[in-house]
Length: 146
Image 1: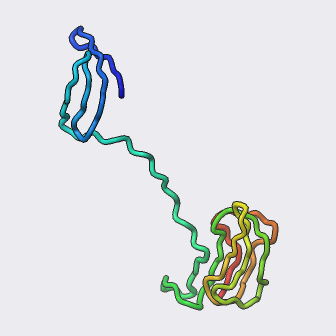
Image 2: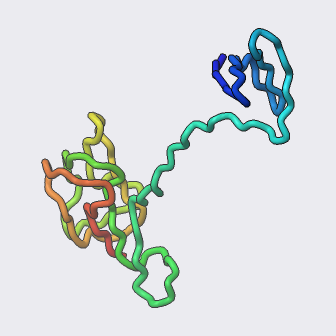
Image 3: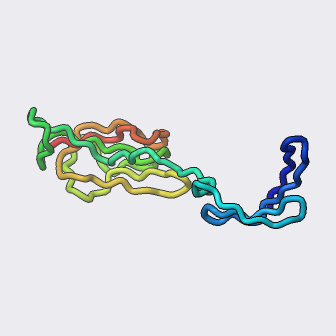
């Protein structure tokens, strides 16, 4: 219940809102109950909605051809950190051939170990991090060539 005091043309009114449902308000004015219908439906206060940024894919592929389309087995894929953390272990070396689904790096984030796997077949072109290094979301960890 909300209580208000109004002064209209010098007259004082104590108003208590008892109930609000759709466009009908039950209220008490100086001890007398009234039902008032308003022209417009009263909307309840909305709870703010959390909007999260788009997740960073673990592998971005840059095609070797100028067509702008992704082709399997070509281009360089960049394995990126999906969230901030610390590199615990690197399971591959530069020059290693990797298969899709093979674990490349173990990353500790939020007190949990996360295995980052290859999203494509290819060869490890370069490793951009070392064990113990802190990384931020979206940092490139390993590049895989076709």
